Amino acid sequence: MTTTPPAAQAPAPASLTDRRLTLISLVMALGVFTTLLDTTIVNIALDHLQAVFHASVARTQWVATGYLLAFVSVIPVSGWLSERFGARNAWMFAVGAFLVGSVLCGLAGSLPTLIVFRVIQGIGGGMVMPITLSIVTRAAGPERIHKATAAVALPGLLGPILGSVLGGAIVQSLSWHWLFLLNVPVCLAALVLGRTLLPASPAERRHRLDVLGFLLLTPGIVSVAFGVSEVSGKDGFAAAGAWVPLALGAALLAAFTAHSLRARGSALIDVRMFARRSFGLGSVITFAGGFSTYALSFLLPLFYQQVRGETVLHTGLLLIPQGLGTMFFVVALRTFAARFDGRFVIAAGVVLTMIGTVPFALADAQGGTPLLLAAQFAQGIGFAATTFPVMTLALAGLSHDETPRGSAAFSVVQRVGAPFGVAVVAVILQNLLAGGTTAADGLSAFTGTFWWIFGLSSVSLLLAFLVPSQKRAEPVGSS
Image (tube, rainbow, N blue to C red; front, side, top):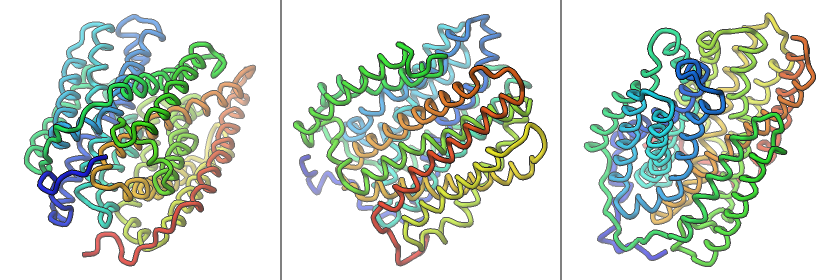
């Protein structure tokens, strides 16, 4: 990639005070939180929307699927948009598009119009996270990236939990329109604060869009995402609706890889970044997290509702300890953990997640709730102890010019790895449930699936010890 002339460089990270960096991170967190929250808050209300619109399950599911496909389709181009129009302008556009989509969804009068407006939401939402990572990585620099990524990653861990609570409360107490209108004040606050606080970056007119790469990568990612979304059917990965788009997506991604290696710096995403130990391992661990961290977020609500018979709202409340564990790590343990080698912090996080899975693997249909809540608190700490160091590992080694496209590449891994891992666990649960007719059979299927998650988590544990040493001389937050 061509080196940016000194005059066109963004301000050096050192020119930003710690206070200004904190404010930037908090503004970024507003945008990330509302886009990720909207995924969960709507998913939990799909049954209600099906009844409201008198539609089939398959048609209603497109409220979620349309958002997901639009979300992943724009991630690859987000890096180019940041370079071409400036990161702040690109972020403002993304949040603005999500805001417009949210308002339209809240005003939708039919299922088809709601699906179309969800696509508009997804176009904005998909660009927010990669552009956010690009801005905070550049603003913080390698020495302060630990502090900056914490505020950005936290909403991604809390969103699924708070989404369950808010979604359940809105469905039971308010109109479904507020599932979307809830985003409006948050987006408006993000736009107002973003215009004031985010660092301006110059538009690089010389950056041309990699059209061939876009035509290969975007359909490839969308095909994989669609295939994964179809795995939940009774035939799992064997269903033609699942394996055909997965195979097509894999072929397109392979073609893009070959194109990127030839195109070098001009490619939409430079796949050679994955050959670096830090970025490559960080990406693999993130992808593997779909089989543990995100799979638990999928399985726990089903366990409480189908095995314990809890309502949607009560289930959301029962999941709160997981979020409290995540916040506890950020507030009380992150600075202390930063004193140690990152390999051991990541490994300890995986071990805590595994320990937090065991009580569910041994659970009965009734009783033991305090132990389960304590286990979720341990899971929350484990999620955070794994997520923050891995994100730092992947992004800290990117140069100033590599950051926009590198952030897009990492976001692709996140958004494909999470649903893929969840799909695998869903197939495992479905196979264990097959043929069962009693409540005991259902409990056995869930506990067996939790044991699968426990075993699959060991992959991330082994990978943690391959991470390059990251021991820091000073704790995070020191001046």
